[in-house]
Amino acid sequence: MPLTPLVYWAQRHEDIYLRVELTDAQDIDVHVHENFLQFKAQGHGAKGQNEYEFSLEFLSPVKPEVIHRSTQRQVSITVKKGQHGWWERLTLKERKPVFLAPDFDRWLDESDAEMEIREKEEKKNRLKASRHKEEEGFISLKTAFLFVYNLVQFLGFSWIFVNMTVRLFIFGQDSLYDTFHTISDVMFFCQILAAVEVLNAAFGVVHSGVIPSLIQVVGRNFVLFIIFGSLEEMHNRPVVFFVFYLWSAIEIVRYPFYMLGCFNTEWKTLTWLRYTIWIPLYPLGVLAEAVAVIQSIPIFDETKLFSIPLPKALGTSISFSFVLYIYLVLMFLGLLINFRHLYKQRKRRFRTKKRKAN
Ligand SMILES: CCCCCCCCCCCCC/C=C/C(=O)SCCNC(=O)CCNC(=O)[C@H](O)C(C)(C)COP(=O)(O)OP(=O)(O)OC[C@H]1O[C@@H](n2cnc3c(N)ncnc32)[C@H](O)[C@@H]1OP(=O)(O)O
Image (cartoon, rainbow, N blue to C red; front, side):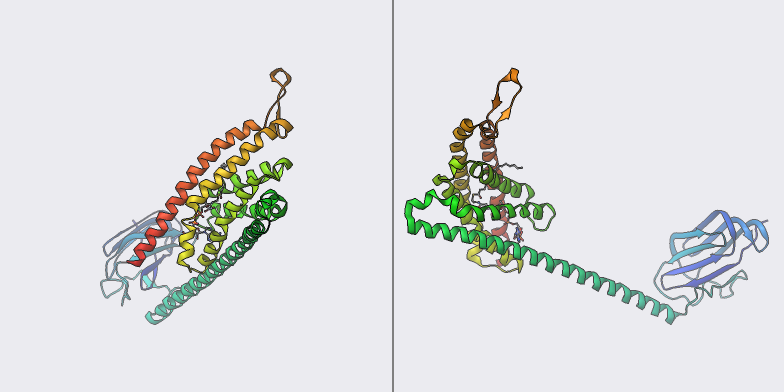
């Protein structure tokens, strides 16, 4: 014959807690329907090892989900109230069942329970506020980092652009022949640093595309380090002037635009320039780079620099110019990808602005 275990109870505004005095309980079966709870389990209770069961008709309906957890000493049951609120008693009948008693370990009266809710909410708000502070700290660190990065690049490219322009006015055509000697150190610095842009895009620091940034940085550094840097014969060619001038012309607009963006500010003329002057500059820049690559092909063939040695049976070596022919095709593809990307950015930017203005 099943016996009834001792059951202790307590409540909060949202939950009912039941503690069933059964040790080593097994085959626990708890069912809840509307305001009815039924419990059945095998275990060691007040009357020794036996099957124990009880049922409760709650004061109000409860939610059907019920959580129970059994430990060596007891079975804990949590039932969610159907509606948030305080119950004046647990059961529908005013006379409480004899096996039921208050759980003084968890007992709180209504005002204490309200205080508990308030404390929990305050704790949550404090946590939220500290998270918000952390986020703000991270954002200001990110803004500071981007601002300094953009400032350094802006100063570098401004120095290049102004220096080349002044030299062009002073020395005329002669200045085209010694661009590499006067400018290359700063250009090397700026272009190595530009690798940061690929990392920024890859780690989501800024909303730039990774592929367009990679094409831009790899493309420029290939020309700078391989074509110009490794061939002394290229140093005095006017093509260096055109490549450097076209690169720096966009950057003295792009970096100040980003600097203002760091503070959610914009200057309309600068925005328009950033999203417009690439239209002539990009094809011209790639054209100038292609001319540099084509000019370097006979030099690589002659000097055999970077040529790839082959096994004797196949011939002596493959000239690096073979790689350069492939690169010329890649340049064309890179130009298409970045042109499309910049066109989309331009459309997005001006469409958003127009919508905001309406
Ligand atoms: C896989 C490798 C293969 C290699 C193959 C090589 C082939 C090579 C072929 C091509 C070679 C080209 C070489 C380059 C030549 C030239 O440069 S010619 C001169 C003219 N050039 C240009 O006009 C291009 C200039 N470059 C760019 O515009 C960029 O580098 C870009 C990656 C091509 C595009 O920029 P992107 O960042 O995607 O667009 P934006 O609209 O400007 O930015 C998006 C948002 O991100 C914010 N942001 C980006 N960077 C920063 C930053 N540093 N600081 C702060 N904020 C930044 C920006 O504000 C935008 O924000 P929202 O407006 O809020 O979206």
